[in-house]
Image (cartoon, rainbow, N blue to C red):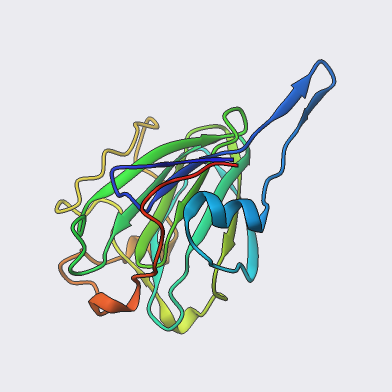
Length: 198
């Protein structure tokens, strides 16, 4: 696997090594040792989630407060999504910045979103199956939501031909300025400066 830093350096775009021929393809969707080496981290994953959403559905921007802050390794096994991570770590050089990447069944890319970032995605295809691993268990009492169209963030969501479809909970998200955010030190985990691949 190869891990490439994004505009938020510890948000990493991960490309697995895919073996394909006329019969189809094979790749390791997750390997703990390879993940640790590629990301320079030592997180353990405790929960796998799978959602299916229709075109235009937007989920996010979600995060959990410490001690339940989640790192997420996300990918798409069917369809296409625009996946977004927002740095909400006060004191971070990239605080308030966002990155967006397309994840699809065709490119087979994954995105590593460390604890301390809010996350959301918009479905670009007719349907999309979205899978993600988390470093802590879902804790509804710790869950928070930032509004997807907060002007301060100014996320460049793709045009899907109309307003995105939101859950009632997500439509009540708050601005970054109003959001409850963790202390600076709560999220920072050691990682190597250099990226490696395996």
